[in-house]
Image 1: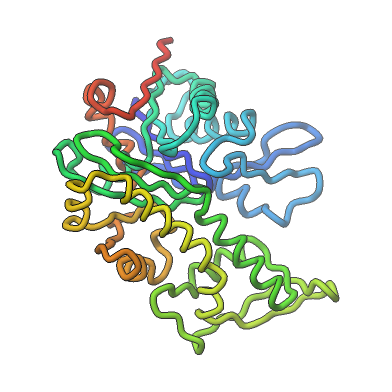
Image 2: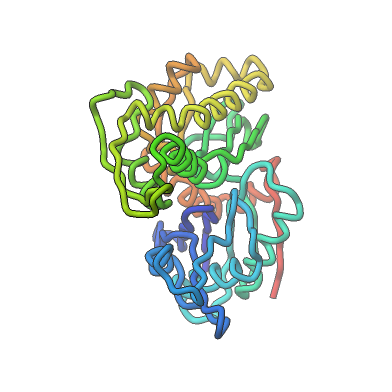
Length: 337
């Protein structure tokens, strides 16, 4: 059995053999601090966030694309793999995608988490490679392709040619940071404290980076900081753009620096082929035309940006020999049992 895992800060997406995506749930786990037992994982745990009693801890064990709590991450992965693989006696092969500039210590933590499930063999593949493969881009030719993967914890930018990453950069500005920026903006301007889910919902429904309008508004509800009572305010597209402006500018600057480090021949290819946008952050309203205007290069969103990396991870099994021998930036870890 072959399992591909997109181990994201916001969501974990699992593919199984040739069946495609079989699981897509939030990277959240809830456990009882009194009994030290897991109460819920995924969607059920996400529903408890901000609503659970004090003895139930609802935790995001993955932060900024890497593991922040080893024990809970192992429990989370184990629950999801058992849910998709069936009986624990089945020992699957696993490929997990990781951020492009992850450290060796962080790689080892992810490897240990996967091996704790009893997997037969574990491989790691970098997210930009998986994203391009999942989008159906041919990467084995001497042609430059640029991908911008905006996830929950990190944004990865990479230029790929001939099965390898030529240049890459990563920044911890992505979906979660966008939510925090919205919370901070409303707190400073209206003295209202929003919840994470409220900020995420208004980001999805109101964001228009390309042509924000003052007249398009949405009501958001939270807690008044001075009075401590429920209160609401109206946010416009223009205000939401102001809240996210610094974060988007940081991503644009990282893309420009990556292009500066890329050989001119490959930059010419990118000008012709455009820039591929993947990840949940690619769904921000107006992001494609906004980046195209700022960078002077056509940007396009992948057909399925949310599951693009996971589908590429699944497709990597068919290229197992190439991955281990020909991919310059692939790290293969094998654990026979």
